[in-house]
Image (cartoon, rainbow, N blue to C red; front, side, top):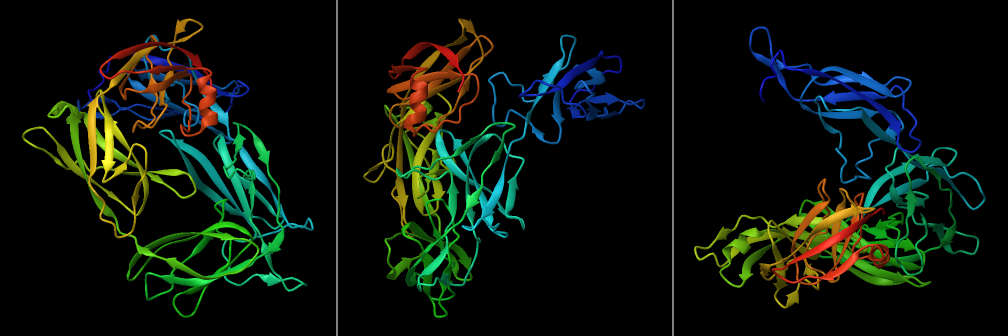
Length: 527
């Protein structure tokens, strides 16, 4: 960090804080200007030059900072009930609070989004409040083109049955209400002697097709979701756990909504269990640590209006497997192409149809003197994985295989105790797509996407065009792609045909050739 001369010019930084929805000023917002610089003291020793600086916006939302040197600063505003915009709606030219101060710095507008919320009440079939019921919030997210379902929060309903989630980010959510989250006693019996219990309720309810549905929450929206819980006849699942001989394991029964609010009782003698559920499809799940190791297990169970006995729930030790990776090139001996294969990324495919980010290859291997291959490895736990190549240059994954499995088309399945085959990755020269993004004929900054018609082992990442609208994508497979441009980042699930259909009507489809450059002009669209 170079010192700032005492006689260096200083500038007046002004701006406004406004509501993103109404464009109305936000008074009394806390505004902070942060910059890292040094100025000499009277002793001539460098010292920190009074950073950060704080201000408060006036009744018109205006703020002022005096005597700011020509440096790069981070400028942010905070107010109760509001939040930053870029985490959920980032434009290609969004400075994310970073500004260069100088003679040409104009008035700066800081936009804050009003925070949304979801609230409501949980009641029983008689309309009475159900205090101590629990509501769980699930968040739908995407990562590099894969959909994710994340646990966000759980709240216990108040005495009047009410709950409230705030502040939230705009996005897609689902809620599940249950009479309780953990209970060990068997359900009660009704007047007819049937075993009955409260069943969790999901909102929005999943359609019959089995795909999940979500509620879309916009910035500033105050949504209300009320629940009414009902008792249903419960059926007993009983059996034993195999795979360990000492202390009883922990078992959850998970339904299609992700709820684990079902009674599971472990026997006094290891390792019998009993569970009570309504008719439907469920999974027995276990993942725990004890004195004799870590264990994991999953078993689908379908209940059709009857008890089920004699279920054998097998557990396996939760130990990671090291999978060797061998990277070669086509044509052979292309050492430069091998070096451009940066790392192999695993994507953990969950039984509920969602994905999570898995580990990367270690990059701890070595390059042979001939440059013909590179070896490294990846550590994975038991599960099912897709794999993707992250490269630094114009190379793509021509093939990825393990034993007889084509990992471009099929998942890598790792069972407890497996010794997986080597993953063989062959890289080759890719295709390039470059061009200009335009709105109403004028070049503008935008996010550019290339979505393959078939899996190409790439993570879906947006590329930002520059101030002249120019962009360049490389490392694409010689295949057909859908190209489109958007003024904001798109949380796209590239495996969802309905989402892709929207962009197919607004983008361009083009078949690329290895070693060639395709030219495009893309019209900028909003999501």
